[in-house]
Length: 77
Image (tube, rainbow, N blue to C red; front, side, top):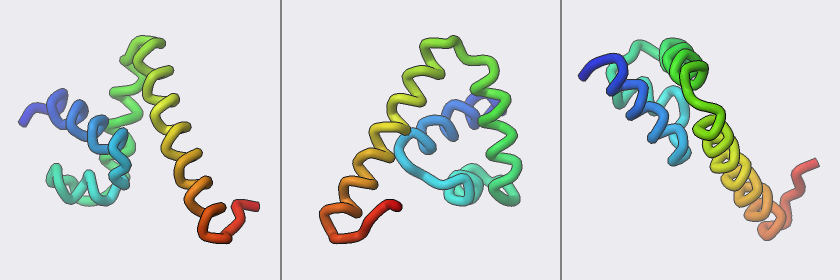
């Protein structure tokens, strides 16, 4: 798998909720640090629309997570 393919796969996994450590294990990296660097470089090359879409997905996931905590009686303060 090329670096570009790994970057795309890592981005897909991250958007789906995988942690950097999970991505590293799946793609054969030594740890989460190299995956963070890979995604940072990948994002820096993305168009504004691509970055905005990625942020929207992450914001939706965060809202869902906070809502689930509220429903279980936990607060996010």
